Length: 194
Image 1 (tube, rainbow, N blue to C red):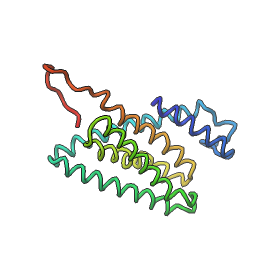
Image 2: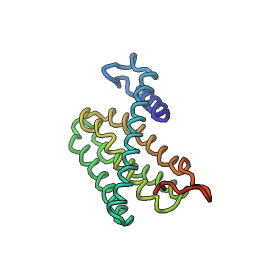
Image 3: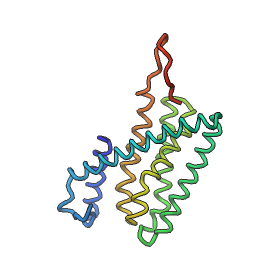
Image 4: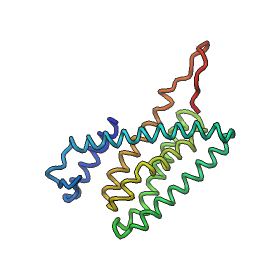
């Protein structure tokens, strides 16, 4: 949540400096301060955490149902590609409300960031982490950002929500293996993360 607060405050400040009409909850430049942005960022960070834990639960359930890891990975890869195309299509449908460039720039940027995070994750752990990381960074971020995509029809709202969500999800997936240390030899067996 701290990552969300900091990233949202920085993103909101940059957006406020570049667009004087950028406001939040009806408050234009004068009333839109760093404390409110940090509070919103904390809520976005909590929302990101809920999405992350929902993915971990989904991953556990899917692996127990499908029984073959390659089937679950194939399904995740297909869904990730579909989500990028759906994001572009959604923004394209609302291109009158959004800027004309956002419908192709946002999916490309999200895909490149997901690819970068997945490469870092595989270097830090192993190659089997690539597809789940891509799925989390693309599909889960897309689902978490749905409120900004569906209701506002505003490019600044989409960017204001996507940037902290991407940062929070990247932080969580890159920290997961550090928090789940391998059990010491002779320790009792517990649940293992995949």
